[in-house]
Length: 377
Image (cartoon, rainbow, N blue to C red; front, side, top):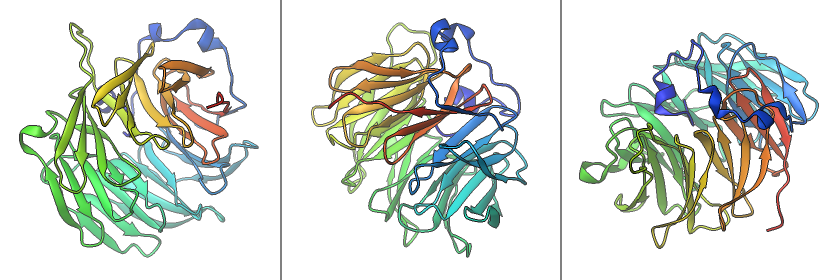
């Protein structure tokens, strides 16, 4: 499940996931900064994405085996994505908002025509780890627990398969050039695939790889570097052309007995020299890539589930197991804003393309819409 810890991944998602209630701050728990609360889901909500074309429509999926497409502005449900056999853990809109996809833990993928709410395509594979739409085409990509990565044209279903090597395809990221795909595997290795020929350009393995599963990936906007995060509590920077590991960022805490892993990682959009990692122990680290140094460390009261850079400024959003969304200034490590309202652990969030709206989902069975405010950069 993208953005969740390895600890959470090992739990049966059809049972309630439990977190330490001490992680929740009383003031934050009872303060609600959201502009709207979506309450259609009957169980934990695992994932949500905002349509990049409209910055309004949201698709959310949850443990109730259902996905919904709804409006962040009005709260109206546009349609319900029925027919799933298990928890819906992956959702997303195509680049132009024509299609929406939903996928569940059993491996069933469905694609819906947004305008009509009608199902136009479906496929069943092994348990799904992650899903991503292509940036400029009606192409859907999925990584599975059996190690294979699938790519389909929608709605024709024309297919290519990127074969694994016996380990789960735990994470994936389509590079900005739209021509290469990076996949991180359960054994700590990374492959760079050619999308057109389905051939492996680089297999990053051996002594330089992670010692355990690669749970998050990102690529810089210039298509040169790949950032990986692992359950071994390290992040690595890999050169996409040579397949060589440039550096390793250690997020290991000395003298700590707490389980730790890098849950989320990303390069900055506005300042290519910066990267960020978020860990299960609640640390957001800002890294200076050229000098390979830790620029700032931002401490949370609970584990960081997901992070996302602002598109236009060196600011980072984080979602935390304490139920709070935070905005950090990467330049000085200070927290600029907090948005509270959820009554349980956050599991995912997304920010609209226009930067005005954030939608978060939680174990409290809700999705919440927040109006964003940013400090002057």
